[in-house]
Amino acid sequence: VKDYGAGISKEDIGKIFNKYYSAAKKFRKIGTGLGLYLAFQIMKAHGGDLTVESIEGEYTEFCIKLPVSVVTTMYYGE
Image (cartoon, rainbow, N blue to C red; front, side):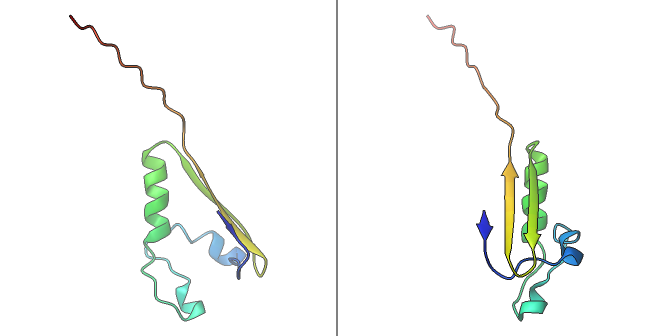
């Protein structure tokens, strides 16, 4: 997901996945600091990854990567 908004500062990039960290105050918005933390934890729990790339004042891009799992079901019926 990519947007062309305010971007995220280099200082904040290293903190945005931390529990309760929110940069919302900088933009006069309300945030709990749990959204990106929970998204990151869910990705980890499923063997995936959540990354971010941003240039302040230009864009922010989040990338979600999940492993592919193939499930084979065998049926031994009558």
